[in-house]
Image 1 (cartoon, rainbow, N blue to C red):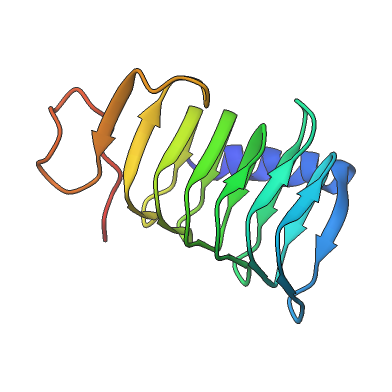
Image 2 (cartoon, rainbow, N blue to C red; image 1 turned 90 degrees about the horizontal axis):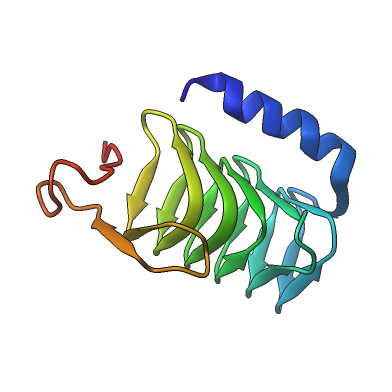
Length: 147
């Protein structure tokens, strides 16, 4: 993927963020947003978007302890839960996911860690599953780098 996908997503998010969780903030409970949400702190609960053009960004300092759902995602921090994204999920080298990722498209930088399943197709379709443990899926399946 390279840094281009992440840079494009960051530029787009600057224009759409309407909900901001700062690096020093902790939200205990579920969070629902409409357009764009940037998590720099901690959310202890599910993060869900309303709307088909929603975007979720998790900063390197950000942490979600729950499931997350949005049309597009840029993950630079930690998510302890499942991700559901009908569009593109972008995982930077600092991303750490402990849960399944259901996605339309996925972009991963070298160094991103996923401990769970990759479910290809739209977020509404479970047509193809790839385990992320080395050697557990056919060579034709997507294999993230576990470093």
